[in-house]
Image (cartoon, rainbow, N blue to C red; front, side):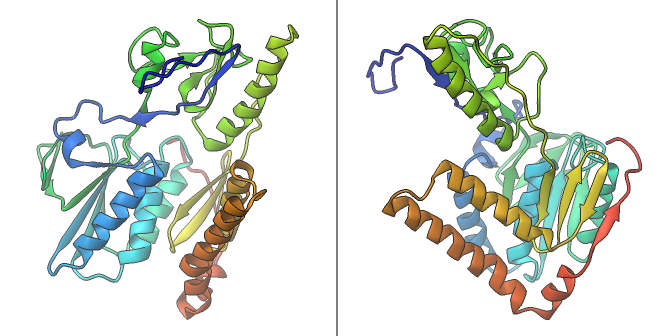
Length: 325
């Protein structure tokens, strides 16, 4: 293995967990003028840019390209912070007929209903054809103004997978066996978004963590000449946050809407972070403390000091599935 700075590392077994990179699908201007939404640094940059724009006078328009999980959760967080700003418009552009494609249609209806009090405009069955510094051009021939464009429109395979021979063509995910072993190199295992199994699964963080544990065990077994274990994903329900407005619990065809579920989503986040960075030392313990403090300041405190927010916590709804997305 050779790193970018020229260092070389020999290995008997290797686990590749490079994830995915932002995919603008070749849309002209998207790489230059739209802000990606694929990392903590990306989200921090978006937050700082939006805060700067929100301080100026006059109208402000934000466009979110992509109405799946990332786009909807980005919408919720923007509304959480700036819903009270005057002359503030948000547009969400999604190529599928509904928001959150692949989930019950009731979710699309619920997101639209929760946003009805704000100037949020949804463009579904719509593709972006060009992005400039201040406008988004759509396949309908329409163009809309944008002071900030957030691109959550998808991910593609990093160039490393093809360059290293793990994938046959550019922008292809690395094919692996049921045991997560590369189909091209027997001593390499690929996990997370970078891997594509014989029976593909959705690219979710909880699957990536399960794959990591399986691949680690299989790497040890491979070096010992033992049989490998197939990766068996454990299905988990999905929690989708719409900022302060609502949180949705999705399990198969069942969707439950309850703002109080935000507590559960935060608990899942804290648990996941503790697994990634267990507080075994002072630095990790300080990081856990900082995350809890942020949760208290940004989520718990605003809720407990607002009668409106407390009232929302008591709401609960079972959303019936009406059709496939």
